[in-house]
Length: 499
View 1 (spheres, rainbow, N blue to C red):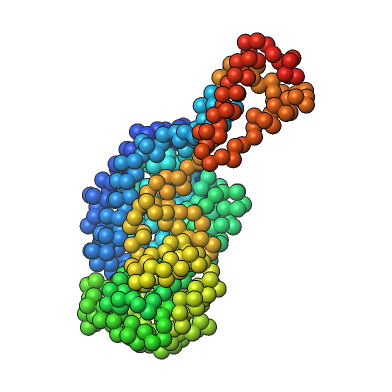
View 2: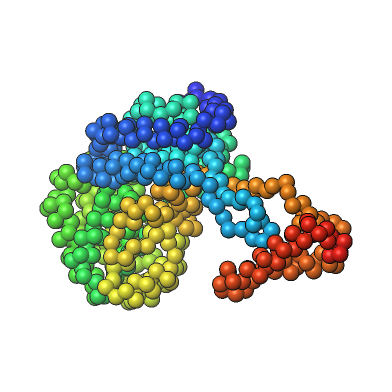
């Protein structure tokens, strides 16, 4: 891709955007319909690409990727007309005769940088929001999931408007070159280190961004928890996609007396899900490439504590077995950075307060999980900590509810998307007010020269009520304001009132 003139590509997209065609309801709906058709007509090809890149089984490919993206498209199609309508706002005394609303308008040309761990979902779902909002898009899938990236580069131009959507593949040099250009919005999904690079590039042009990052998402298990249920849900959330999930539980905090019992239950869940040898299971994914195998290997071999289960590595097969580390300390390697792989450290804590203190001593995570029968414990964990999302008694499922925003806080990200939040991410809320060229006499109170009477009238009229019932509070002011306006206009009392 070295011969691509990125400035020309971006300029061409901006030229198309300036024609105004992407702002129409019809264009947006046509593109969403085409994207839905792409997913329906190429499900097998997409599943095969995911199998080649990550060894994803059909169930994970469909549920987490293809159907997930498909549902996002359908949500946008079903609600697009409503989302595009003006949002009427409350008015005050001086604007009660005016038309006041918020118009959501597209930002322009958006750069979307996809991720490799869920290369369909994390590339197409932001694209759905950008299209629904009426933007032109420069889309770059992650080169790490090469087969999926090449397939998207092949398919998207066949279905979508080639003048308004461009797909570019490549590695670090291509991404660096793309970030040198000016966009109206940048959407990046990936790790925090690259997120900082994207943020710095955006800052040069004051470009707004969404950064979907990650971090070490904690899981606290309380003393009264049903460990049979908790272990199933925790094991599913941790070892889906071989742990390569940004909102996967990264580590577990549990009371010392429950640690061995939890490990025993997790072993049972692993066997139930993947059999005696997960390597032979059709349902256990692989690490995406050898570089990431080496990255995760250090947590298995030198992560801290001791290996309580798993620890098997086959670099040639890109396989690392579901692994549990016990008695991990906060200073151990496994607790210093996001694992993003099938290794689960367990760190003993005395109680929920110690867990809260530990979570708050670190950067804010993308997700937090709490398993507790006691609602007071769960509520305390929620109220005393901060994270992009929080789920009580389950894992990952918050990402499947489109009415919840998906995003981080602090080091785990900026901004959010999914459902209507995706549409709002790629739009500008434009404040609009339409006034009539009438009743000019009412405006004399705000025109110079300013007299003491004018000031007193203005102070009285602009004074906000403090009563709880807004109707009763505003009624006298509205009535007197209308009477005053009529008196000024009909009886010509400007001079009497000091205007």
